[in-house]
Amino acid sequence: MEADPQGESLVNSVRPALNPSKVLSVEMRHIWKRFPGVLANQDIDLELYRGEVHALLGENGAGKSTLMHILSGSYQPDSGYVRIDGEKVHFRSPAQAIAKGIGIVHQHFRLVDVLSAAENIHLGWGDAPWRVTPQILAERTEKYCAEFGLHVDPKAEIWQLSTGEQQRVEILRVLARGAQVLILDEPTSVLTPGEAEELFRVARGLAAKGRSVVFITHKLEEVLAVSDRVTVLRNGRVVSSCMTSGCTKRSLAAMLIGQEFVSRLHREQRAPGKPVLEVSDLHALNNRGLPALKGIHLSIREGEILGIAGVAGNGQSELAEAINGLRPIQQGTIRVDGVDLTHKSPHQFVDSGVGHIPEDRHGMGLVTSLSVADNAILRQYKHAPIAKGMRLDGKESLKFAKKIVEQSAVKVSSLREPVRHLSGGNQQRLLTGRETEVASRLLVAVHPTQGLDIGATEEVRSHLMKHRNQGNALLLISEDLDEVLIMSDRIAVMYGGKIVGEFEAGDVNRTRIGLLMGGANELEEAG
Image (tube, rainbow, N blue to C red; front, side):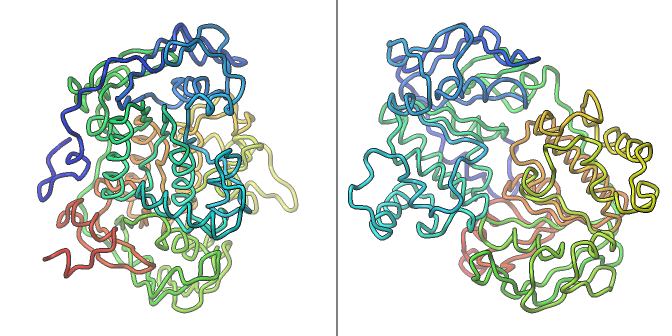
């Protein structure tokens, strides 16, 4: 990676001189997989060796998830075969794969919302204690948390946890079972640099004990930092498989998208204008009725991006919801353009020019069963010219949807196509385009590129930066520290429901921010 002018990246400090054994653990040969209208995997060969961390790269739709679902038993190949330790296997279910030591942490969580974190970790596990009590499960879970450095509240129910905390439950559930082949899909997207470093050490420790680790990530820096080998998929085919030591970020990006990658991110140098958002002494509770925001003060001006850095569960989600009228406020004020919107409804925030890209694009942002056109007008259907009295004007609806799709570079076959048929990148482009249209004054963007490939990430970031360059205010909440550093004009760090540090983007480095994200105060950091 490029040198940090004031401090070395934490991820670079964990990658030793790697020398994986050459004992083959997994062999996937001539794998083909078709779905209606899609050829997902085309004659793919993949080898995993004991004692290696193997990175798997590819844009959305490249076939990497399908390939790993075949390995982990969720799908069966149309042709080709899989060998585990030399034995040919035919998995008919994930349970059969787990029995053979193949474990996967899915990008989209598979947890039971009404059960606790501890109960989810032990659910369906043959080695769970025969005498089950909440205390026993909590104690066992705390032991795994300490062992792997991934901490969650064992007694909290899943619906009460943030997205990042839910992901940690998924990781713990697989690690606790001692998988011999561990597949991690974007596992560091909600971790601080220190926690990412610890996860990398976990991966290296598993590899040192003879396990194979597949590390799926869109962060090229992580590939270079932690993996022994990397396989790049494009359009369902393997385009390269090589030792990571011979790769650079530029060469990986070129393999990923099939051409030299050129960033289109352009930040106009401009003096920020008048305040748009002003938050004073904001207090709010989380879903468990506990304090989540503890006296938040912040402001954002015209033509400015304020980035919020922090580990999931430190109040960022509650802050975003409060600023959009989605969460009750116990104390404090929220003003947009000087107008007090405290305790106002979400519709009143929208009418004041506030847009929202939520953390969960499926659960809150989009209605995946509806068409592209219907989703494009969700914020406008009550207003003219789309609304005409008590009915919708179909022609105006399609006209507006077409504008959103074209401006946001959403790739669709038809405006009437269900959103669930779109790739994750195209879904996020559609959501981003719709919300920037609403956000004539302020856009609140929560994890706007999480889980996206390099091309879709660049498109979304460029769209957000263009919105900022037009003089709008943006609040960017992201656990991707690189994203916060790249995009922000100013950076605030949240920990324990408070702002614990605020900086001009050019005056701080990732190490300093990482310490604050982990709970170090300014005095400790300075010492």
